[in-house]
Length: 62
Ligand code: FES
Image 1 (spheres, rainbow, N blue to C red):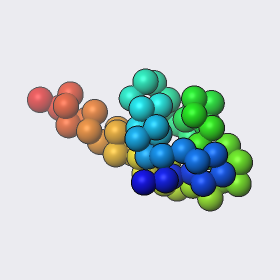
Image 2 (image 1 turned 30 degrees about the horizontal axis):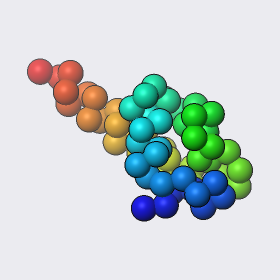
Image 3 (image 1 turned 90 degrees about the vertical axis):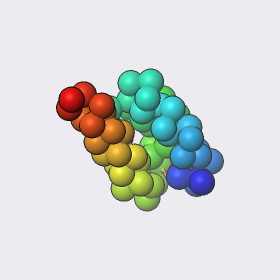
């Protein structure tokens, strides 16, 4: 699924950026350009960041 149409960045690329350390919209943009232009995809990037944080919380909760 395409997340950022300005830079043709797919969800898998954003997930990879997050998994490799991007912890906010700006650092995702620095890694893969997603969200660094018109900004209309930022809500989707924030959703992916929150999803990653929740998964991390679950894996460290036990
Ligand atoms: S759609 Fe991502 S910055 Fe425009």
